[in-house]
Image (cartoon, rainbow, N blue to C red):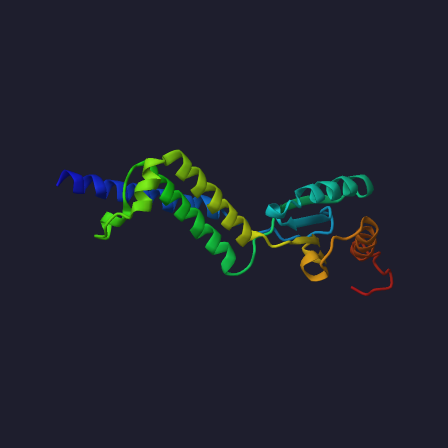
Length: 198
C-alpha cells in the first residue's frame, strides 16, 4: 500500500512538472498598444527565427537603423511559427521533462498502466546521466526542427514592410532604407489647409 502511495505521489509530481513546464513555456502574450497620436516616434519591429540563427542579422540591422534613423525605436523578438508546429514543440518539451524526471526518480510509467517494464527502460534507468543527456538533446533537436520557420519579418508602425517568408531573402540595407523613407514620407505631419472651413 505504501508503494502505491509513493507511485501516486511520483505521478502527481510528474504531472505538476509537465503542467508547470507548459505554463512557463507559453509565457504571456502582450497586446500591443495602439498609437493614437502622431507625436509618438516611429517603431520598427523585427520578428525573426531565433532557432535559425537570425539574431546576428537582427543586431546588424539595429546598428544600421541606429546610425541612419536615430528617431526610430527598434524592437525585436522571436517569430512563433503558425499552426500546429508551435503546439507540438511545447508538447515535446513537456514530454521531455516528464521522461527525464521519470528516469531520474526511477519511476516506471509502464507500471501505472499495468504493463511490464521493457528492457530499454531498465537500460535508461541503469544509465541515468547518459539517458537524460540523450533525451534532452533529442528533444531539443525535435523542438528546433518544429519551430524553425526561416522568418525575418519587418514592420514599421505595425505595417508590414518586408517578409523573408514571402520574398525568400533578407532585404539589402539600401532597399530597407528606401522602404522606410517612403513610409516616413507619408507619416509626417501634414500642414493644415488655411482655407479649410471648420
